Image (cartoon, rainbow, N blue to C red; front, side, top):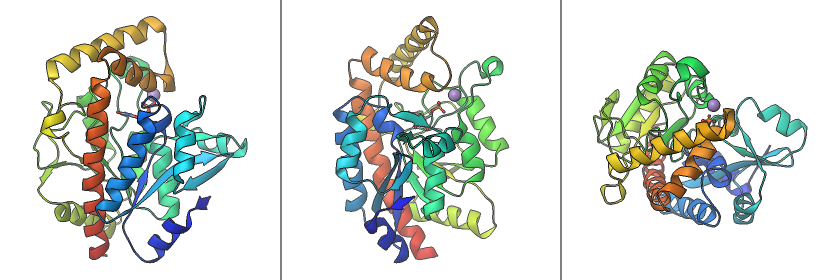
Length: 300
Ligand code: PSU
Ligand code: MN
């Protein structure tokens, strides 16, 4: 594993470091917005007092803290594999390039000693999982790997109710930042409750610290509603999501290709409106993540 000098130094000095994934760059957004977004997220983290560490795999070697040039390459290069826990050993042994999902990014972040990770949305229990068993590896990872994730909630492409049930089974606390309701990515609320409404970054840092003090393995899931001015009309976006799901079934897309297909289809169906919302919610998460991590290092 290669840890950049900057990240190594920050960790040894006890500074707040934030992990970032690369699947969102290579499979979650189109070029060049993906690269612009990834660099803007890093900048926001820096402006809020933390050090960003974008994680990806280059020729079989995990990189913790990619350079701007490497981020650009991940954004442009076609055919980089999407890597979750299952795929990690194959990609590394075969010296391939890999874009890490939430699960693989959490694994590598933990190995590097990074405790917080900012992204847009996590994977979850897919609709009709009762028949397909399609449950993202992200959820099991949150149940056992000691990295806390800041996101805007699971996307409504998923079954949000089953996702919450699964997280409960895995012992993952779902915190809402100044909300009682689970944010649903493009929209600020859903009809589901979060486990706890935390009012400040310090409150959240204390919950994460308590989880560590009691040796409760796994992450805390921190859900941060998309800023009001960028949130989408629920009726509109849910209609487009339903269309995307129908298209996916027609196209026969299965397994790990489902989520990237749906993300791209929704951008297409909304003529890029969903992409703008996506970028702004991530920037909002970057700010909160840096604030939480900054409070957390003071508690340790
Ligand atoms: N949800 C989003 N945007 C994303 C992803 C999920 O709103 O970019 C990506 C993340 O990398 C996540 C992965 O870990 O998709 C989940 O894929 P799957 O559903 O195949 O587990
Ligand atoms: Mn899946």
